[in-house]
Amino acid sequence: MQIGIPREIKNHEYRVGATPDCVRAYCQAGHRVLVQRGAGEGAGFDDAVYGRAGATLVADAAGVYGAAELILKVKEPLAPEFELLRPGQLLFTYLHLAAYPEVAEALLARRVTAIAYETIQLPDGSLPCLTPMSAIAGRLSVQQGAKYLERRFGGRGVLLGGVPGVARGHVVVVGAGIVGTEAAKMAVGLGAEVTVLDISQRRLMQLEDLFGSRVQTLYSNEANLEQSLQRADVVVGAVLIPGARAPKLIRREHLASMPKGAIVVDVAIDQGGCAETSVATTHDEPIRVVDSILHYAVPNMPAAVARTATLALTSVTRPYALLLANLGFDGAANERLELSKGLNTRDGAVTHATVAAALEVHRGG
Ligand SMILES: NC(=O)c1ccc[n+]([C@@H]2O[C@H](COP(=O)([O-])OP(=O)(O)OC[C@H]3O[C@@H](n4cnc5c(N)ncnc54)[C@H](O)[C@@H]3O)[C@@H](O)[C@H]2O)c1
Image (tube, rainbow, N blue to C red; front, side, top):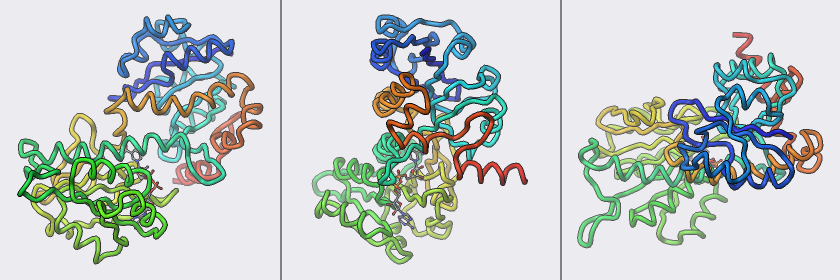
């Protein structure tokens, strides 16, 4: 099969759909891999390295989309890419079609077989192609929180680990899933005082098993949240109710009780955010200040660490991409059932129930 790796065109998206190492594996399996020049630059992979791995370098996106039967990307296609997509072409990437109905319409019109990383689901409910990005966002959340706590960024000038004789900073993590656990790991590593809240007893027990007395676990309820926020330097918003918008747990009136210059890193912003006062920001201008509290609410945090994120993402997508290239969609989905859940559009029809429902609402509106 001909596999195409275009350069991402979304603002500040530096990740790439395949590393040179992946390209070597695809070529060794007998496939031809077309890589758009500069595709891996943002993640630190030069054209020459792709060339040595066996890729055919192509000057522009049209050259990649025009020849490839399977396109490996990171983000959903944008308007300039729509017209390059061809009927029957396999597209394997993050899509979030419920949030981007215009992309769904384009995939339907172009009759693309689109498989979304984020809806590939194992029988235990886990999302193997989403987990590494949540892990990255969780770890990054504390790193960003620590940075913007610095005085020159408007933070309250607290060092999370403190120093002997001076109190540590306090990190409050709301939601103890993948993001929350990784955030807690980083906060503990920096020597901060850490409180984690969740509604799931199972998750809280797992956290206690992991961290022992280094982390205070609390049931997520109004009283515990209020008390935790009053002493918070960094708050990490990491709740998720699958398929729904994030609950607005941190309300505007809570901000007044928090120390001035504290920061809310609302990782859940891609689901609307769990602070009432969060508005999506960008890597260019990540911080908004509301009532003297900093808010960091960047929906594509992993792009900031494009190299790590590319290596993590392509490690989990590579086996699926190889199967798709070897067997086509039906053969691949026969071998790995979770790929069926990944299928979002085919032959001009939506094949995923949630996406179909979201599109219905959009069309109705
Ligand atoms: N901004 C980014 O770049 C970025 C990157 C990756 C993930 N995310 C987002 O981060 C969020 C968390 O992702 P995850 O993978 O950790 O999800 P997850 O499902 O692993 O964890 C979510 C946790 O929230 C808990 N929860 C639900 N309601 C709660 C409540 N009222 N109070 C406290 N906890 C509650 C759940 O019990 C669960 O443990 C998602 O919205 C995800 O899309 C954002």
